Length: 168
Length: 457
Image (cartoon, rainbow over the protein chains, first blue to last red):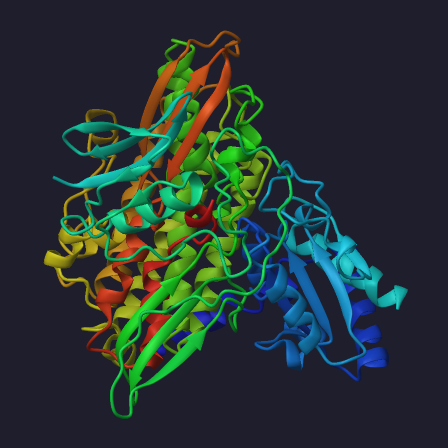
């Protein structure tokens, strides 16, 4: 335990130490203000992989690491669509996920927003149309915002979330 | 004999079923008018998913099989549509009425079922787990996947070998470099050009780097699923550091499109410093985590894959090695001269898989340091001419043995088949948890950390 505490003190707070990037800091401040104003301080996101390669999921997981620490801005990834404000959709929308995605969307309480993550849902990635792919997603559900990239990096996701918050 | 893969091809007037064992390859011709074959699943249980896939893809019926449920085609997929037949060219399908899938369950007084997925509570890929429960105790688990089935095999058909590179590299994000390296080997076989040792070493370095990142994030996520989140904070920091260095090296955080015909210029000393620093941090992590008894109380004897089952189900990779099966595609002269040592554990539980990952991290760091000495900036010509033929390759991805087989005809891909290590290993997961309670399942699943996208194709 003593070793752990020593390491903890030596390491310090990485979120402030490493991200001295002023631009990102300003973006983070912007997000915090808007989440406070428009979502009473907490914005819940439910992520659904509709046929992705897992890179977009890995980058979303990275948002919770000490460098990005997304939760400090009041943004949470939640376990159920019923707890969510936003449905974040990645992947090419396979025919096997189609009905499950629609079901998840139904379960999100209104008002709800759909954000697409990565190039796949818009069919802008390298994948081409096959019998098993139903993307673009916006042909099936209304999409409020799109986060481009293959996959979008964590800092890019944060920037795009600010754009989304300004938009609504 | 170990079954490595079983897949079919549509060759003009007949189908061909190819069965790849570790010691031999069998080919079987099937008449298109009476597409019937015999199952080998009684002897090789891992043949089951291959055969069910062959039925969905080609319509070949395995008459004596004990499980003929559809695999890739879910409740509303039209019956009698077999997309890998060459006569099938449609880009869309018409959904049919809902036909319920019959899960294999255990019946009895007080026995109930728990259905989990395809959408899970965390940020992970979709898959379905159907548990038969006796209270907290798991009696049986029926795993159903292929929710992320994108039709990759059909997608790359009739593309030129070079055009399909970007798609192959994005089949499974966590194993991108492994897929790219395997595909690069197919390209060099088909063009009859040997890659210079510098480029081979560079690709091997990227592959070890990918393995390292995968293992480092896992050694955080596994304790996290046992309620020890401090480990995740620590390891996710190291994983993020590594991804950033990976981006400096390859231009991409996951190494997409990084395995190519050139080696970029990068600062070897900086890279070495990073590796040394990482080694120190992992060492600290290991000492710290091994001194947390409550964590090992959850790890020890949980989710045991016995050596017998591992062999019976032809398991590969981390899962097999944690159960004492000495199986690693890097076990050759090239890797040995760079310091490869096979990592083995015997207990086959979560603790074994967790410790094995730490062992492999150290070995990867050591190999990367050695590989670095062979690497200098280099460009080789991209091959343009490809010979007709059938080419196979094996790569040890961060999950296990990856098998790829590509048939080339007229410079174009005639049949692309890849068998992700996860495809084999998923089939043994149900046999690992009969002594555990359902609350242990996330921990067991994470300790295996199999891919869904690579499995589903």
